[in-house]
Length: 482
Image 1: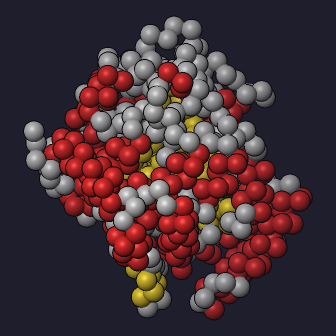
Image 2 (image 1 turned 45 degrees about the horizontal axis):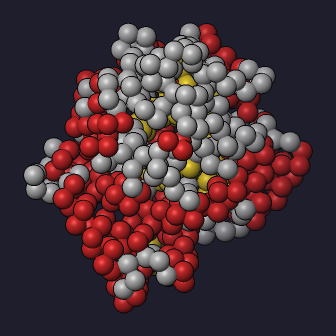
Image 3 (image 1 turned 45 degrees about the vertical axis):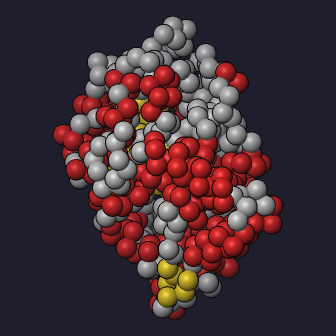
């Protein structure tokens, strides 16, 4: 059995089954150790340093103790600490994005995904470049500025050249005041050379869900196709970073295996990236297994309740304070409302998980990857976020100003990212209000902007932001950024 080594580039050494099992045993032993839990919460709390904050974060073993804890008042305290951390480093901003499905052709046999090769009744589709332009225009007409590009794995029907051409097409669509300013990419594990090509065409974050860190379960759930190779998949982020992509996004599909095992593995992967590359994951996603064509989630016996899901979100935020956290429209409005305060910094809006879905008047179901629980419009999501005390943000400034990878993390860790992010969020919200919002949302939005402008501590920054917002309203100018 391989020894645990977070600096190793071998999957079974930086995600060590033995280390995870020892961690889970330690957590179970100490799950109601109030003295230890109090120490860990005190260690995790954000500490004021100069104009910013510092957070120590927690190791996978420490955080696993918090996740195992069953004491209601301590769990509630965890939620408060998670909220403190989120506000300290990301403020009350929630960045909006949408997934764009290019193709659902796939050669893999994943047992939990309707794209699997043996599913012969799902409608297989692949967008042409003209169809991509139409989808992008539909997304721009909603107000979206940031997309997550999704495809199945099929080297014949969806080669890397198609993905690269599609990214160029997306960035090339300028419709009215609309532009897609950041394209994140969620495609199958690939080579260093292909990651370099993605970097060259302006990829934002490279996202790859591990699905499960339990190797035996992983191989069982991926019986056929290139995704069956656990090591190649798990080591993909190292190849991506070697290829020059410095913003990578992790995630597991909760419900495939035991959630405490997945939680420990996820945090070990984050620690590995920090140990080897000096920068942890730019984002962590927390999807749960959902119903889809040819897939019944009740066939899997590791589903988690909403309460456990909230506990997981809070503990990830406490353990990895500087990462962005993403929740998708897999989750209902009720669940998304509960976890907003626990550390979420990005959410999707008006998502369609079918290929070509945004240009259809009625939501198509024949090529969906999973059921979308939250089917509200972008305007409804924007209004809901504001009702929950959040600033809906369409900002992509850091990416376009070169504040990625360790440059973004150093600003975030010093608590300085708020000096850029707060005004950028307000200016992009003003763009949305002018170009896409309903009258009710527009009124509510400008009231929020006025309140939030007053919270910007630097008088000069506040003044410039106010002037820029006035220019957005009066002169149709766009794309201001700090």
